[in-house]
Image 1 (tube, one colour):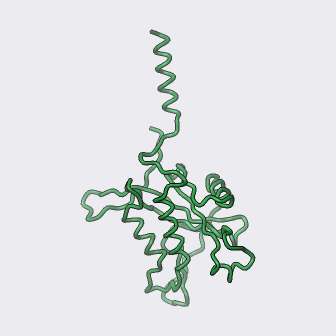
Image 2: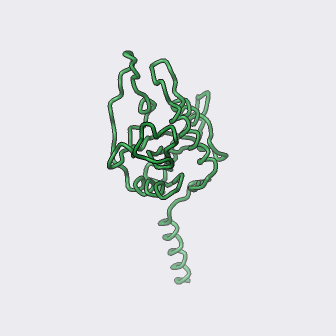
Image 3: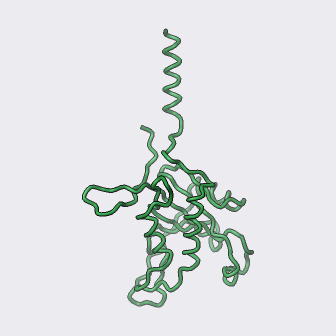
Length: 200
């Protein structure tokens, strides 16, 4: 009987130490997330005319993904971060906010948001290396919750400014904080809530 208790104790301890899986967890080749990332890249490339009275394609896409599920599990986008590669050595992550993808564009009524960057976290460095090696999307559970990073690859139109690159090169990346749509009490519509990875 004592040996049986020991076996159960080992099972409980092993289970407590195992990494937690999030319900409906996604993987790097998840088609819904790959499609979402492709839409974000298209919006990023099309974001022109960032003046005060315009909602850019990037900002519209960010708003859509914050209030609408991007897959059948109710996953949504909490935040989007731009990873600068082509013009930054080492690469940096720009602040996550709608204004992070906006600039004054000659509009005196729109103040430029202060530049705010940080270095890459270890998982982001690994993800960026995987993107350089050919992957399109990397998904990880991190201390900040479930996150993904996808490549922004050079298109022919990009090469007029990025002359020292070739088509298909990684010019940057988009990092996504993933959450779940939830309906808070007294709310008229669902909102995207971060899904934390806990050890309880």
